[in-house]
Every structure is written in C-alpha cells, then in structure tokens.
Amino acid sequence: MTKKVSSLLLLMFFTTVALAQPKNPKFKVIAFYTGKSDLAHISFVNEANKWFTEVAEKNSFSYDSTSNWENLNSEFLSKYQVVLFLDTRPEKPEQREAFQKYMENGGAWMGFHFSAFALEKSAYDMNWNWYHNTFLGSGSYSSNTWRPTSAILKVESKSHPVVKNLPKTFKAQPNEWYRWQNDLKKNPDIKILLAIDSTSFPLGTGPKANETWHSGYYPVVWTNKNYKMVYFNMGHNDMDYEHKFDDTNKTLSFTFDNEIQNKMILNSLIWLGTGKKVK
Image (cartoon, rainbow, N blue to C red):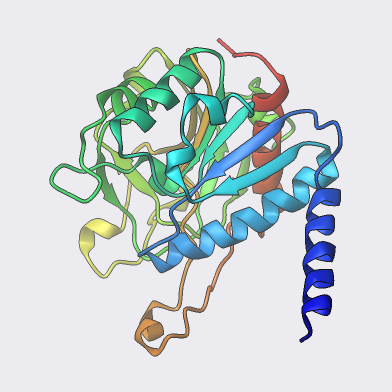
C-alpha cells in the first residue's frame, strides 16, 4: 500500500468516526473498560462498545470509550454527562476520589456486572467502602450461578424511568448472576428495579451445588436514590469454555441480543443523560 493511499484511508476512517458523532449531542457518554483476563468480559466489552456506538448515532448522543483509567480525573470527566464502567472499577486513590466527586456533584453513572465485584484478598479487594457500601450498597461479592444461563426477571418498581414500558416479566440473556453480601431490600437508599423471578429456579447448571440457585431474592438492576446511577448485573456472555485452550474464544451468547433488555439500557442512558434523580 502506498503512503498516499494509506493516508487517504486514514482520513476516510476518521471522517466516518466524526460523522457518527452528532454535532450537537443531547449528552455525552464516556465508557471506561479494562478488557483483559476473562474471555466473557472481553467479549462483552467488545459487544458493548459496538452497540453503544450504534445507538448513540440513532439517538443523538455521543459515545466515547477508553481503557486508560488515568483519564478518570476531574478535567476529563467534566466533558461528559454520563460515565460507564463496562467491566472493572478504578484502583488508584486519585481516580476513585475524582469519580466520587463527579457523582456527588451531579454526574451520572451506569455500571455492568464485574464493575461491582469486590472480594477480600483478591485482585479486586474489598477496599473502597464508599463505592461498594454507600454508592452501590451491595458490599462485597458473595457467590454466583454457573454456567451462564438465562433468567426470568421481574420489574420491581414500575414507575421508574429505567423500566418504563417494560413488561412485568421478561427473559434476560444468559449471564453469570451475582449474589451480594448486603441485603439491598433493607437499604432505604436503594431502589431495586429488577429481580430474578421465582420461575427461574433452579437457576444455573453447576457442576458445584452452590452454583445452582433453588430459591431466594436476588436483585439484578438497581439505583441509589442519592445519585443518578444504575447498576446492571448483566455483562457476562456465555463462551465456549470447553475449547478455550484451542484459541477459539467463541461467544455463545450476546448480552445485547435482546430487544427488551436493550430498551431498558437505552431508557437508562436517556434518563441518566437528560433526567433528574428519582427519589
């Protein structure tokens, strides 16, 4: 390829990207991600970046993403109305402080699946009390279902903008569902929006007995009344784990391959970007 042709292709690429961003966006979204280690999380991040880019263009907001967590600072965040954590959380004290100030000063946040994970003496230690106990309310991770399977979810707060015009129950995409240390029902600041419906049980296939749930109450989408935020437990695609050492890395299910679930996520983004806190 000649230098001239290469330069032309680069120009065409950046022009296409520029055209995909609206000139006067309703609001601006920035997504942070790590995209390493877990095949399912990497698959989700790739899928999410593609999906959010497409819906941003259709709905007149802008969407950017970055794997550089050093960008999680006050100056950078001031350019955006909504922050997304696609798979992890910030680890450095100055990044955490910048995010907390952003949220306390009216910023908005959406997090998925592993972004809420914390476990003592793990690579994601339980060492950020404000985020896990005050902001999310969930505390540390306790356990999960396995293998990634679909669940029937029920709407728990019909009047909230996130679940506007959703059916009372619907089938979610396959996911690794989390159980948490704290009982979110007892937290007056937390509004549970979706929980696993009892018709889902037994949920999970094992092989370990504790990886299949037979009863209980499990919130999967919620918000904190003191902030503009939504957490989704979704974000773990099913993978071809049996052949992961063959480098197939095949994704067997996609989080955004669900019309109702997608509507809820888009509802959330529009509310976070343009709405007010809901008490």
